[in-house]
Length: 182
Image (cartoon, rainbow, N blue to C red):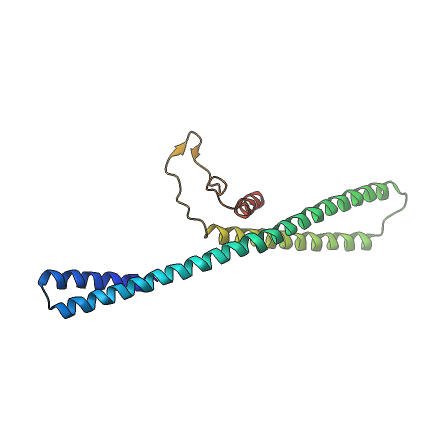
């Protein structure tokens, strides 16, 4: 579509130039016909882009958004379960501290190494989750026609909010989720 616009613009200039110079009628008519043809092609390209855009928006709202809600609910359940597991582990550690007996050093070292491995894996997993949310949020933000506000509030520049732009809920959810993980 953009290439057609450039060609149309160039031919429009040519048409104006031919018309001003009083070029032969056949050349002016041919250029006029070409301009009409290009205008029709541009209109058709715009309609195709509009249909594709509506289809993408529909898929986003009917397919991606429900899957994202399910994903968020699943993560919430996972975090609650993890919290309960850690609470139970804390209680087990307290009970173990109260037991009599001398701990074996090799078991303690193994436990320490396992905890370090777990912490490293957990950090990688959380980083992957954060990057996923950031990538999803950045992809969605590309779909918004956002021009930053030039007026500052008393607290500084107004924070970006997809909700204030009237964006669909998935934009708001992903933006807030991304912000909370940063």
